[in-house]
Figure 1 (cartoon, rainbow, N blue to C red):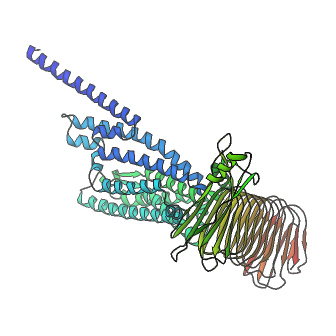
Figure 2: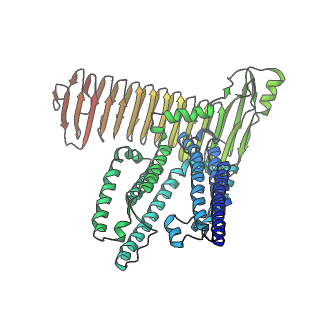
Length: 620
């Protein structure tokens, strides 16, 4: 080889080795920066908008995690778990993406690679650096961060009352817009075949319509539940195998339609694994977050105990101090009242007052003298006025651990001529409502204490982990639960949904549909005029009514069944037991070994009974 050629070849080799060394260093540096702080690696490579997006995404996730874990009794454990898992997912995806982007940048810098080869190698990450999305994202993220850190009372109210509706609307919008976009791309793909101008960037993804159908269906079910108080989302537990059926049907249709067009369209035919996985994960996340109370009350127990963990409660003894009465002005625009207590009873009742009056009783035990006086003096009630009134206790922590909370009992007097929506919660104490009237809804939560409702008007939703639940003379619907305690319900004008893990259930004179369940206890129902669903795993069930105006479904795994039915009506009976005997006084019903069946009048309604012990069918 000529000396000049040898020198040129050596120089060219040095440049190639130098370029490779620079490329490896740049890729290593980008990966290291991404590992240190998500987003820095993208910024180093010149993807400023994408890097900032990763940083803001993590800030939003952490801020949401802190917000939803600090709003007292409204903690949603599945939501916190999902937000917590999102952090490592975003982190590792950020590292993966920055390494892929570094490869593109390295290839893009090579002068000996054609543009066609660059485009065929990987997708251009710099396409996301153009457009208005970044500006819109900054504005929306900034507003969200401000709200999460300021914690305005209306934001918590929005999440509590309209969170499911907002989530359902977002799912419907995303699914619908995405479906329209895919249909448009499919239309262009079909015509591109005839024009022989196929767009290689948009490949046909089989399964995308199935994924979008799942997303839209979940949004519709969630919206119906939020608006009507139903439980249609639970149908997903039964319907999920239809995903495979829908996916298979979509595959066959695409195969038949596109296989006829041999060529570019068929070559761009792929399974949409990513889209399907994304929609399934999104739907599953929404399901777990919105339906946590259906998991045998496990989420409820964990949710309430999560906030109560590490807190020590003062008993109602020792130092007592009555705080000066607080008067909260009420305007014509005032609609919502939120009461949040850590340790103490909450009583709400109507009285001859013009504004809301709050009387507070503070108890400090285990310490005496000036130290107890200081704790009592520094324990106060914070109040916010306006359209949404907030009443929140702020007890002075004390004790050796510094976590003992004084007991602060609240007695709240409401104007007789006004109605509000209520959200009442306490970690340790009972909640009593007497002659309270709501505009629409009443939400109650206690980790350890009774729920007592007397002469209350409104749709009530409440739960406690440990305590008796009583509701008498309620105008509206109720949805109450406890983990350990009896349920006593009397005179309800609308639907009743009550459940306990350990305790007896009693429902007397409920005019709406009744759903009663207990895992360990007896159920007594007197006056079921419409639908009745009663279930006990370990306990007997007694159901009486002079009218059968709905379908009955009664089940007891272990316990005697006593059913009192009217002699006149339009219903049919179908009963089955595994053990024990069937005792029947109706000549219209036929007993065949362990089964009983028959009808009174027309079979407009059905009474289905199933158990494993004696079954007694009597006349009411």
